[in-house]
Image (cartoon, rainbow, N blue to C red; front, side):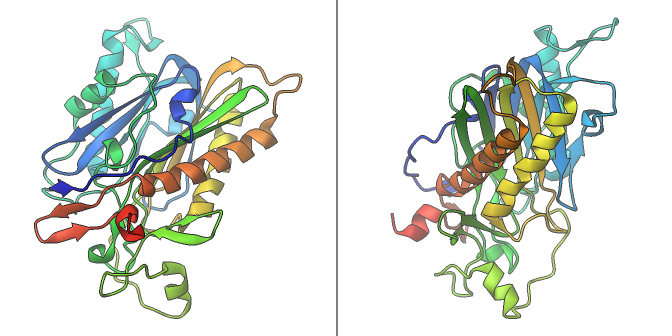
Length: 340
């Protein structure tokens, strides 16, 4: 496994710009896979929206507005397909050891929803994130801006697989944040999309399916519209995951609406998105530090902010990624294709 160097991107903000949020990565050195934990030790009102048709998730039902639990203490994003859900157990153990969680009389119970992406083509598929990996990600968590690119849950991510994984490009992790009227919204995205990643400002493909000779970007949308036939797909072999967080005071209903609006950012930056072979899932966390009163932005503005940071973070995920060579298989990055 030989990754190429990446070129640092200008800082565009981070999920950790939201007060009360920490992020930690675990990247497995044995093959490209890993997990990323988002911690809210003081608790955060949570929401989720699952748009892909092939999700791999844990404890997402409890985030429904009609269900009892009001706060979560972390979110785990992991590679390894459904096996990777075990990483959440490590986060629960780490938080319990520190007395973080919900008092259930017989113990302190950390609430850690999780979602996974499919990165099994990258190396030995028997190696996937487990409870120890999740624990290690928590050990690495901090309030500093997390690394982007080939790290954590984005370690084995690929994009542009509709015409075969051999014509794909490297995906990864990206972050962004924006502050309006004293309220901050941040996003972290692990992009492992079936479709291409698009720069929403230029409508140009940044990374995705390549032509048969591997030397140029195909443009999946146009290829499909002219009748090119995609390769048969195994459901769930892709998926873009992410967390949107804000320091605004939100209810559980509002947190779920924020997660829904955040998917607009994926729709701007991935094409096609939310497919039958993706499990696209976005979580929303509100640390409730800033009341929505006075001149503070309301839900309409917060929703626009969420979509914006998700779109930016998705593009950064591929621009921060590095090319990887596994034996005879070379997976190029957006930087390599740009000639940087």
